[in-house]
Amino acid sequence: MSTNHAQSQSDERGFAFVMVVLLLLVVSMGIGLAMMRFSAQTKSVGRQVNKYQEHHLGRGLQEAIGAWLRQQNGRELNEALEPETGHAMDIVLADGSEVSVFLLDAQGAALSNLTNQSDTAIQEGGMILRNLAANTTEEQFLRETRPFGPFTISISSASDRVLDAAARVVAGSQADRFISELYSIRDNAAAISRTELTQVATAAGLDSEQRAALFRVFATDIELWAVVIEVRAGGGIRQGQLIARYGGVTNLRSSNSSRSGNPTEIGAFITWRELDLDAQYDLSQLY
Picture 1: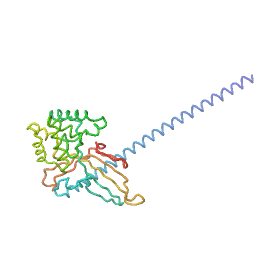
Picture 2 (picture 1 turned 30 degrees about the horizontal axis):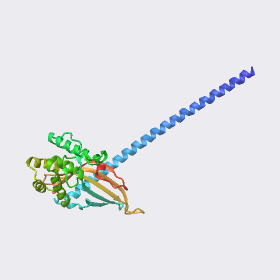
Picture 3 (picture 1 turned 180 degrees about the vertical axis):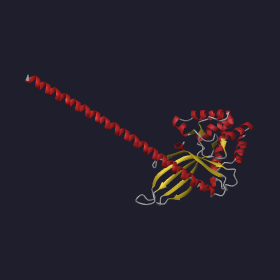
Picture 4 (picture 1 turned 120 degrees about the vertical axis):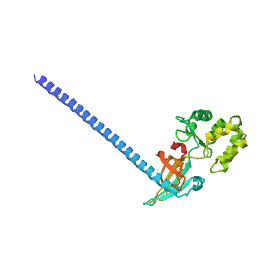
């Protein structure tokens, strides 16, 4: 009798112990789920704050560049920028930090998204992309193309690969001579005019159809620009050191309005992101 009673008490204690363990597991899981949910919410809020900050940074920069453009009194943009770096202006903030603004021709890559283009642009653009794919690795191809912007390609900022791929679509069997002429004007001119392209076409012996293709494929009025800002500390042990770098792509369009006092106006940023401080960036990171 006593043996049965002792066994019963032992079973009850064992059952109670199992229930306590299960209860602890449930509580632990509940706390874990709550912490995961809190962590996810914190990250979500953090992303929203960063997005909000970057949005307003982009808007503020857009306004600052717009004001700077209006001060150029109609000068060509290439004349207002430092030739080697594209440096446009510096802005000193209230805490002494200095923001340097650079504007760079971002129309040298080939357009990869041909949606809504004309039939001719789709045909010629497809040929350019095929030529480019035949002479590049997948990684190089992605760096040499962009998903947005005008169809036309900037000779000044195009790589040798893009220039070769596009020139062969324009000039066909005369491409080698044509490419040589393009290299010549690219190396000697900051901005390539329609007149210079006409002279190149004549020197390369292009016929009327090839000349028409030349102006469909290559740009003489650059619209797509990269904006890069570098922030340097204004005080403390890091004074003068680079502490932040951002970049984005925007359109700078000529305005027909005589009231503006300046022919160039900046559009909204198409892309905007933080760039690495240590690594050397290239414009493909902004597409």
